[in-house]
Image: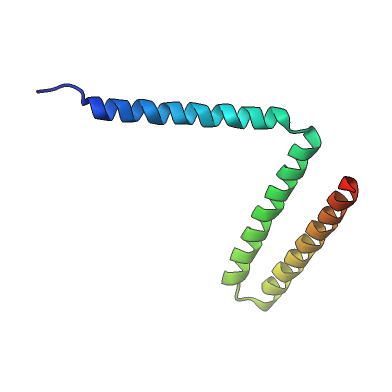
Length: 93
């Protein structure tokens, strides 16, 4: 017989409710953080992604000049991350 399965419907409704709750928690977290914290987190995530991209490219690079350029970029990124961490430490003291 064509129709709906009560267990499937209940599972779908539960998943939808969980997604709504997660979205509400994310909105609440954004509202509760300061603009400075959001900016810092955005910067950290951007640097994390840049580092991952550089490391992935470095793993595939075969040209010595290209490898050297990627290694310099990685060093610069690490230096920037270290200076950012030092600033954050000073601002919280």
